[in-house]
Each structure stands twice: as structure tokens, then as C-alpha cells.
Amino acid sequence: MRRDRALFWFTVPGILAVLLFHYVPLLGNVIAFQNYQPFIGIWHSTWAGLDNFAVLFNGDQKFLHALINTLQLLLIQVVFVFPAPILLALTLNSLISERVKRLVQNVLYLPHFLSWVVVVAIFQQMLSNGGLVNVLLRAQELGTWNIIGDPDLFKALLTSQVIWKDTGWAAILFLAALSRVDSHLYEAAAVDGAGRWRQTWHVTLPALRGLIVLLLILRLGDALSVGFEQIILQQTSVGLEVSEVLDTYVYNHGLLAGQWGVSAAVGLVKGIVGVVLVLGANRVAHVFGEEGIYRR
Image (cartoon, rainbow, N blue to C red; front, side):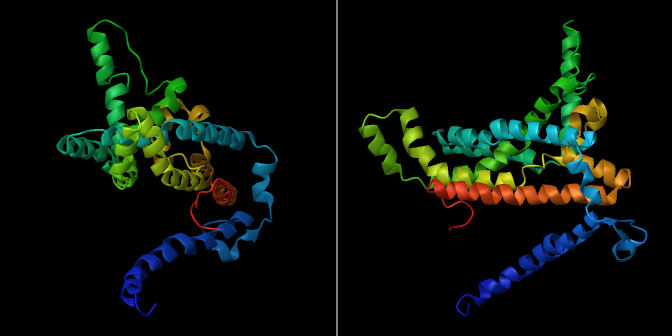
């Protein structure tokens, strides 16, 4: 502490910001156990006990529908979104020209800095009924295909938007890990007769395994959050039946419908589930010899 006191002082603003904006607001979860009314505040709202959790335990249809949609999107994103940065990093790492590699990286990073409002607007301009794709289809007399307003394609649309927006940025960590792989390992594998695919399987992927496990565990902590802004901006085009998830359920039943206690209860349970998933996944990682997010 004495030796590194200057570094510790530099961390103080960050620690204060985390405490102020992440930990102090946790005290507001008390409204999950109240008949909370914002006009009279926490101190004067009456206690409701566990009544607000009834939607979870009594099988409220709207809640169950939001939960099912959330789990479906979670499964889709784990299968398709999570591996995308890994595949992109492996592809970029295979490029021989450093100039081309940097150019491609810079182009792929750019969508990350766009807000979801801009991203959704771009997709609407391209794929809506009056978008560029349908204009070209009409010009060729091939009919139209309103992808934006098709409920059957909504989950696929969300997944493609996430991949387009965040894959390039998420690949940075994997590229950094790949840059630390000793080139002599590839040379030794080549001498032993290993081709490009075997080098990837036996050298590259083992080097990324610890990072993949760590990021997967962290993703599980936020597993039930599948993109509030992205979904709320597109709900009106497809309806609540296919687009309602837990985050939008909390918004629609809390801020809009005034069920503050119920929404806080759902949010609290969602956070607890995230913590349990992280701790459970971390223990599984220890069983397989990985450090996870903390050591035993």
C-alpha cells in the first residue's frame, strides 16, 4: 500500500463512481417489498411483503411470455453472437498484410460507436417496406419483403444487428490475446506437419480458452438482459407478443403502468439469478482447471 499509494489514489475517482452509481442505487430495491408510490416516496409507502413477487410464483402470463422470449434470445445470442468475435479475430489474425489488417479492424470497430437509435434507423432504411432493399426488389419486379415488420424474423433481426454493431469491438480482446501467442509454437506445429486448421485447433484456441471462459462467465451475469434499447425501439413494428422481454416488461409495467413494486421485484430476481449463474459457472470453470473470474 505504501509503495503503490500513488496508483491507489488514482483509483479513488473510479471507486467512488462505482459506489455512487452501482452500489448506492441497490438500496432502492426496497420498493420491491412496498406498495411504492413515487409521489410519497420510499419512507411513506406501505409495506407489501412478498405480494409483488406473485407474478413470478403464480404464473402471470405476461411475465411468463416475457421470460420465454428472453430465454430464447439468450440462447440465440450465446450460439451465434458470442462466437462471432472469436471467428473474426481468428480471421483477422490470419491476414498477412498488417496494413490490410489495421484497415479492416478500423472499419469493423466503427459500428460500436453508433447508438442503438442510429443502428435501428439504418436497418429500417435498408430493410423496411420502403427501404433500399425493397426499392431494388420492386425495380426488378420481384415483389417486396418487409423484414422489419415480420414477427417471424424479429429475433433473427435482433441477432444480426448485435453482430453487426458489436462484433468488431468485441474482437479486440481476442486479438490482444492472439498477439501474445509465441510464434515458435506455430513453427513447431508446422514442423510436425500440422496444417493451418490443426495449428488453429492445437495452438490458437488453447491460447484463447481462458479468455473465452472468462467472457462467457461475465456474459452469464448479464444473461437475462438482452438489449432494452434495441428492442424497445422496434416493439411497435412487431408487437409485444414476440418482442416483450424482461427488461421491456419492467419498463412497460413500471414506468408506463405504474406497477413500481412489481417491476422492482422482477428486476431484483433477475439480478439474483445473474449472480447465481456467475458463481455457478465460475465453479464449473474451476472444475475444468480454469481460473474464471476469481481463483479458489
